[in-house]
Image 1 (cartoon, rainbow, N blue to C red):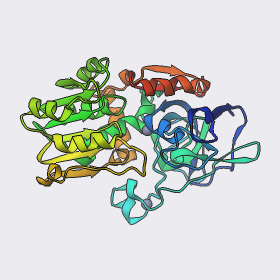
Image 2: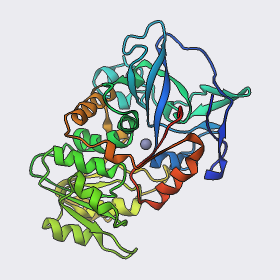
Image 3: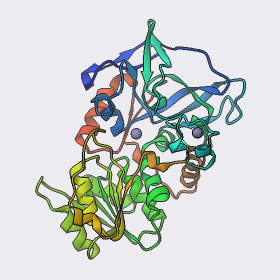
Image 4: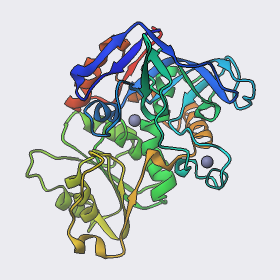
Length: 361
Ligand SMILES: [Zn+2]
Ligand SMILES: [Zn+2]
């Protein structure tokens, strides 16, 4: 089947292949999913650039939706024909942590599977998925059924970009009615922080971005204020403090910049939360002024929105179908697997929300 393979660190090491196969048949609790749409997320670019230190050769991609085409003998969570959003959490489902409602912290996470082969060479998969292929095999709890009315290209984004942003608001920061919020970076994830904060009843939502084109989308998604951060010397901390009267209850860093994370701490008012949503190079260190965090502030590490995929994916799909949550507007372009470079270029330019690949046309 067709898919993409990353053979080293750098965009030039990603190539199209016609010869990818699954390494093994389904185990009893696995399902095979035909991938109908796969979003190209900032994390894909970070993976390709080597910032996550993944072994190669590897099939990239981790934000996808599709149709279940085969199920293992013990599968009960979904059935052939179901439309599903895929989760990166290949958690065990039955340890104390999973049963406690915290699948993202299950000890089974973090391993690397070699689920694909190309002409006999084993291929790793990114984030327990390797979604830039025509069909993937995942654990049944990674395939979350959603209503068929949700278009695949919109549904795909629930698996990462939407959950990462909305989950940070709902599950970790727990933004409350009347509170104030700042969001650094109004792209595919930041827009979901914004719309989730609106749903949570935030009174003021300040979006900050370097691209003027982001203002209209940020406001459409619920931002009450937009700050255009022009030039490297722009003082976003001061701008947020002025707009909010001294700082916000919750400041979200979504870009993945350690410098901006330090700024987010300074934007947070006493007693508030600074939320580290964006992911820089995993070995990076953050330097912040001690006084900036000292006033009873909390610095929250947030991976994938602290999500419970089987609960949260369905929740987002239902909110979408009720007209309360925007998904279609997040998709700026759809294209084929072999056009991945244009998706990377769009991400680097920072002007668009999301490119979605359609592996099966
Ligand atoms: Zn577990
Ligand atoms: Zn992602």
